[in-house]
Length: 469
View (cartoon, rainbow, N blue to C red):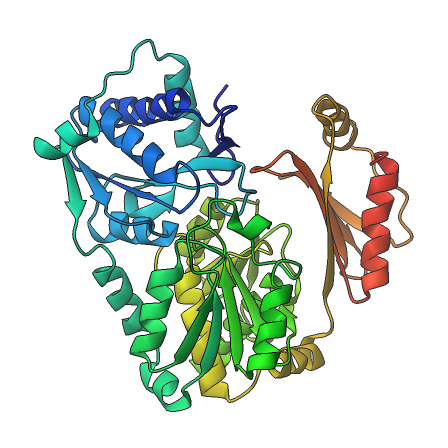
């Protein structure tokens, strides 16, 4: 069965990610558009640089064109944020990106973008799943024929408005004056072109690595983690760069390396940017994070007389909450964030540009900024385990923690437990641990945060021992 998770539909190439299933997903989207009377505007289709991505994008276009919907198609790979921006800016009903984001190379998938450039809600993807189940026939028009008869239109300059809007949000004078030297690890992804354009426009010196298309991502996960960015860290130090930047396969997750080689994780990036926007740029408003993201944001928001809002995992919840409370930004510990006034989804092109602006304006390195935050708000250290388990064991784990609501024995006092998205345990001293199933991969994720890494590790290990994992 085709099921959408928190980041769209993802499947292993050759097993479930096949031409037939891609066409079924496309037909489900087509039928949903018909059902909601949203067939009078084109659908923009983009794709990353994974194996089969461009081909799958064409298979989708053939189904939509066969069903009478016009298609805007890109003549090169593009990051997911571009598709979101185009849907919002052109007031389209739908956009589609063929990507499996940061998943291993054996995966591919489809993200559905809806009105205002938002991630499709669970209600929408649930209805698409039902329509896929009910499919009896899929009608197509060959891609070349659809191009010839005008049902598929190639967009000539799809990046222009996206780039111009980001540049309009930046302090380009500060970037030009500082003249940062940046080493950009594109991780063979589709975010390479737009970030290079922004840095060249703002007179930064930018060198790149892993710029070539590689369907296997150099044999590593296309996710900007401390482990995958170890080579970038070494090269930043040896090359004397001010900053190392990396983003995942479809340009919506960000990783940073400081000039001394220190890896700056997603939680730290969120805290720095929120503090910068409020303290240095004078923005007003709270911040939004998901259940598995650092509570340092709560402390920073409180210091400004603002509130930190907690939502379930899934960026659609973050973007909706930002709109509801007019928050400054929102993000997640897995590496994605968005800022008020931009798009309603994760965008590492803008986030990386804003981070470079922050370094230029403050004159401080990321490590120096983070040390300043820790001096003000305390140390927050997160430990994360991603556990593979036998498929049949998922029901057992779910019963233990979500139905029977059993917990490990913890040394510290538990104040409350949240079952909104997995099981999150809050401790009296401000620590937390959360255990939940991934919405994008067959993994059980356990996160814990404390002022001491050893204590956070104890929380994670307690859950592992309790579940025999």
